[in-house]
Length: 123
Image (cartoon, rainbow, N blue to C red; front, top):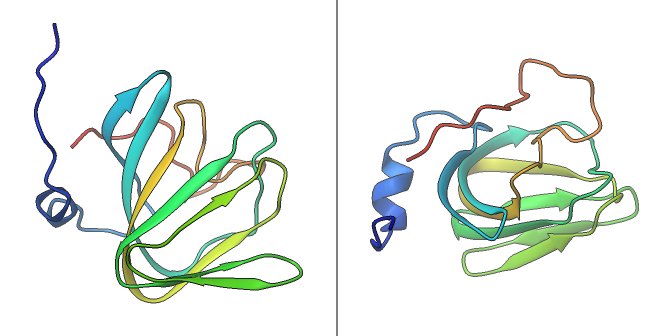
């Protein structure tokens, strides 16, 4: 049986020195709880088969869509449905919890690039 331990989000975020590089904080039922720090703009992309859940823990960021922008603050979350093109942008550093299928690649439909992460570190 795996260890059953609580997770302190502040302590886990303290272990993340960079931006746009999600880490795995937990797994359940084929889903992963990921933590990432956002700063600056990411790439426009979509996920063909996966919905994405973004919960702001600290800071804030804008989720840009082609027809609108949604600003998220601490304690607020947004679900981006599969197939919807989006781009997260954080003017200042934001700490974000993501919940998504383990198969989800952060750059979605884009060709692999310097921001693509496939073998995520576990915190």
